[in-house]
Image (tube, rainbow, N blue to C red; front, top):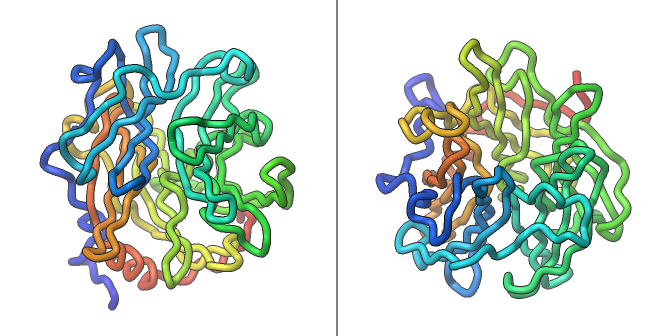
Length: 323
């Protein structure tokens, strides 16, 4: 099934009428902003691990739980994960988490950004029950953000998508490890595209989603404008067994700031997805995103529509380097 100009990719995601779903004014303790959550299904419920910015400007992480993933959110009365003084890289806060279930370890892997004196760095913690977390420390040198592990081993290795800043360039990279400690074979995966809507920087959104056609990647792209940065959302499809090969990449953005809660906030013009939950029976993909760096919102799409759209665009055939 192809997509004509009348079937625009920006219509694939439908915003939830109850947006925003989590806001600082209804948080159980004082906060400036609640945004950019990780999302996971656990024991039949949807858990969001929300970035909470306090009134000093530092961030920590707090769980919110819902039966249907849309309403009646139960928020932890106190922070669920605070910066740990024993980990020096967390001295100025922790933020922007992603969660995957590592099948080989039978544990959840939490990747998040720690703010050290040397800049943001990607950190890792493991948990069996989303209650106790065992910190593993920093994974790679700063400056680095927007990271998630793949949920399964690929060719016997752990695979990480992340966004380092190298030579001032902000591309999405992919790296590999035999043990979650030593990382190598680093490659640029999705480069910025000069002149395009994702010309300034790109970064991974939610963790990679495995489909029959490849790994679905939802990412944010940034374009600098006269009034500031615009954060929109694009798609890519990676090869299942060689994920450094890009099969498809959307030319157009598929989601972007339109509503008032996405345009008015601490950072206007931001839609920043960080988590998804998928219902196999209904084919509903719920995408959770931070809006204007201020609140949590959600939008829904059919996974098969996103994959079909990507399959209709020209082949990318990029292999881990910037052209």
